[in-house]
Image (tube, rainbow, N blue to C red; front, top):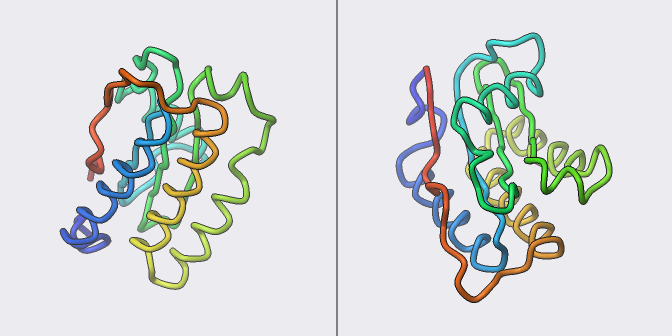
Length: 146
């Protein structure tokens, strides 16, 4: 199954816009990565490997968050970089993961991802509020591998 079968192009644009909107209120960076299959024993391990492979740790404040979705395998994880992990308790993203899983199971991936991005943006705003000269360090487009 191709990415466009899981998230149509108009949905991909909605997700990229949701990221843009969320990042206006924070110096944090939000990324979405989709793949049909989880190549690791668990989605968190796969998300961490993807985070490293995409070099999301290269942000100035180490405050990137990755939403990892292995859609055919129905696996999901959200992982944050060191700057975020140092500022939040373990399990900080669990309710976001639960809400997103609910939307994915209901066949509403775009709505679920946009809601998750909004929630992440609000939380990142609390920890890393926007600064005047902040730049967008990472692409807002969904990354994909098959």
